[in-house]
Length: 260
Image 1 (cartoon, one colour):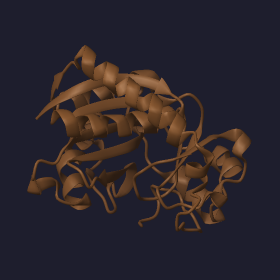
Image 2: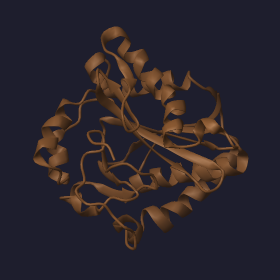
Image 3: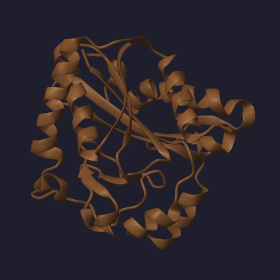
């Protein structure tokens, strides 16, 4: 599979979601597959397309935005590495729905995770777009298949263990969730490398699964132009973040623990 790699960047939550949407729109015009890796400037809560924001306990602790894709609320911080893949549909039956999209593109992260864990544990696909280690989710994904001709598939991998206390301070999940969050696996369970080193290793492992190309100057310019517009008009917009005019789901649970 040939893919154009936009490399790694660190941005606000709003800018990261805007860049993901920008690559989805760009792929519709160019017919190319794009992949990028990213971190967040600060701990952030990313609401799904249909989540009620009432689950956020203390907004002073996190940046908040809403994504286009489904699933559940995700809390992201230094312990995670996020990535996205955007590409054309072109009548490809192998990406005809969310399950098919996950089966096709999850192999990139699954292979990258497996390279690190080796034979120490079993890495497999889990339910609701997860990647599991010994039956427990280490990565979660969501996707958007547009009415046009492109898709967005993005996910978060736990590189080190989740901080249950920090999540409790920011998020109002059922009390039983916090203990379970602390028990979820992470890549740090299987390597002695630093957080930054493990992230670089995972990115390298994943890129070996594709025939990576560099973006053209025009692609970089267009992606930044689209992302700047989406960021200001949408992902930093209070009406979008609060979900005004949308039918929202209450009773949020932590993304990696519970299915839709």
